[in-house]
Length: 121
Image (tube, rainbow, N blue to C red):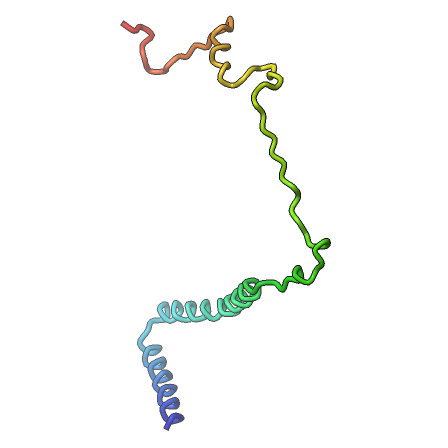
């Protein structure tokens, strides 16, 4: 019974393809063939991507637990140095003194806005 059902499905698919193929224009048939060939061409690459992602998603077998404690990799020590601010002052001074120091300079920047009048009356 199962074999008859499978044979019926195959015969129906072939008959549907023949009837559809006779009714389609040559341009439409070219589009259908192109789509089918594109899908068939993408199957090997999809299988390769699937195999690689499954292989990479498996956790690597780690032998760290079998190593003795002195041979296990460890992180380097972290050293944090805090200063009270009483250290040597930079030659440029702190960053918050920069605008005040710029006001005492002999040169001044001037800006010209294009499209506006120079007279502010």
